[in-house]
Length: 353
Image (cartoon, rainbow, N blue to C red):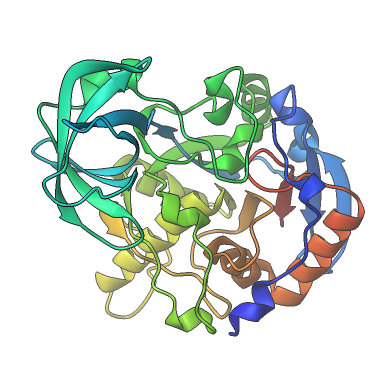
């Protein structure tokens, strides 16, 4: 598929700069994959499209305060650090902004512009500004006092409440960006869906900043997908398998949950030489996933997808085109733009049934 087929023109005014209050009052575009019909609803009405026996699967990863500030030692030059993922032994892969941050550069961390007794040294260099930093001690205990929650590059207004960039069920720290499809849920809505007979299960995928990186190659196939750490427990695997056997639908909250589920399904295939087992289509999974979902992909687990509106030329847009069809997604996005839906992380939602 040509990357140009993932392009569309979005007025800048439609890039949401702040979340809707309350969370579940965002707009909801319902895409019917069988008929091509589009419906305009409010997110708190999502229960009208869910059934008893359905299983919602949410990513419980929590965004860490991954944005740090420091100064080079001894020169005093200012440095901004964006943590990507831990590597063990007090080392982190990170983006480092600042002139001449080469191997051997020492950085002293700052708190409210004042130096603190915590240093990092650049010990390796990578592409696109990535560095490996070795900290003088464990960083995790300092993050709450030194770190700031990073927002996507297209959001230019600071948040009054950083918790609005977390889902209400987040509890596994590790993401550099929020799994934003889940931002629309409130505790009250989740309880209402439970009372309706809809169950809820959790997986984990720690979202990396590469999720915002556009595809720059001419074809999707030439792009190298980012790797992200994921976990699906044996208990949740059993819950999903039971849902499938009983005829319920698995509803992925977001593209991150989708990648976990479909990764685990392929793990199950590796253990079943004759193909997908009808009573156990999915196995537990823990590790890094580099599953790249593009048009033509065969979904084995996800029946319904809840997601936001994604950036042009992104791997996430390719995923939703794979799920609902490229032509239908183009139609849905064109209508969303015409009807002034809000786009991207703090934007409105789309339900693909």
